[in-house]
Image (tube, rainbow over the protein chains, first blue to last red):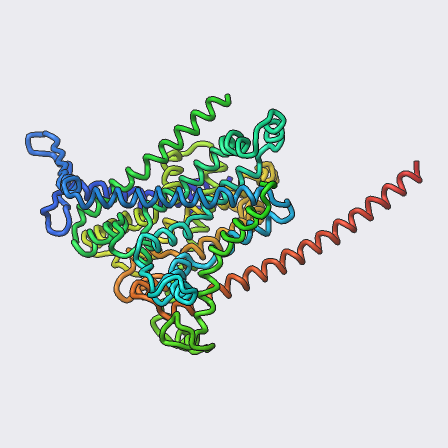
Length: 300
Length: 288
């Protein structure tokens, strides 16, 4: 077969170009991050002395500096920040589940002709930019905001409440930002629920609440897990919502990463904090994968 | 919960209210004729005029659009290649690692991706004096994030395309590039187009990567909005937000008109086919 000489062989082009791109701009940056996190913190700005070097006697020397990790471990602020981020992410997941589960359940029970429209109405607000949606809450939660105006008008409070930059405003923003990630997997799981199982339970004398807790909820476990994971992971790393609605009273990993790099100019510690963050996120993913593997084996 | 229809209705209405309240309030306040954003002072279009005349906003918007178009185009090209490689070639060197890397941006929070890329770019700048933070770093950063979304969108369509079509074209003497451009690409074109639109909107919407990777004087629109929103309420941001809402609504309207027209056309075609089938059935039964 004749091929024009200046054309790269198609197959290698198709494989090579995206591989090259991701290796250079994703794999290499991760390796550099790892290397920086193990570099010596005393170096000027950056630790660029090589970690691995040949000494003259023909010995391979590997120097791993744990300074950055040790300083992160020793300072309570870091531990508190990680705990705070994970804690708020868990709370967000729980609130999304409590609000989203009944909603997804009702949605799955509604008339089939109504469902596409109702799903569409869930998605629609999330087509406006994320930043704008979060910012929009400031109009409502501000000291002179709509909610305070309403409370004053209704005579429930005598002076405006401090709503902005509290845990309340932060959680409102988090739940608002992440609830569709919970509702959609729950809905797609609940809509497949075999109604005959519920009828069988009813025939066997189960009361409605028993049917719900003993049949519906266990059968939707996969939807609950998928939705929780989809909410929890981005919630741990959320940076915009704590900045706009949380204020400095909310300890947050994202802001800590920003501060380490842009304010403390400490690359090593920024890299170490990021690496620990990756570990925190990989843990639930690993659990979920293991759960799914076991599920698949059990089905076999 | 068919036994408690009122509960279901109430819950549903409350959740929808929660979802739509801030957006409705945002749009209304964008017309508020008052320096105090949340104190009502009558209707005005003043802030729309001010936003449209704000050079910082305009520059940021232009930069955002440039980055978004470049990102979407690069992501779709890379994503199509990646999708094609992963669906059509059973084995190639580095496939496992490549698949893993492709999933990383989908799984990790953007702040991690942003920090990883930031340290990479500043290290490169430290070593080689290149690239300085600005358009290049923003473009590459957005593309790293968007390739994965483009690839999965295109891959889900590519899996449905019968490889027999490509084999047939090959048997008929088409060169591999001809097969791709004349058979495969037309078959997946809709997925490619929607991947382009998806990555365009992802890029326009991206705050964290943009904030970490933008340099002095090169702030895309989300970064400008973010830094202003941190300072407090701002009537111009309400206007920008309201305009995005109008754009979404306009897009939705166009899409629904287009779909309604297609549905009507399809119904007409189906009716024609049905009639033809009836005619054929009648003629064949009368012939026998």
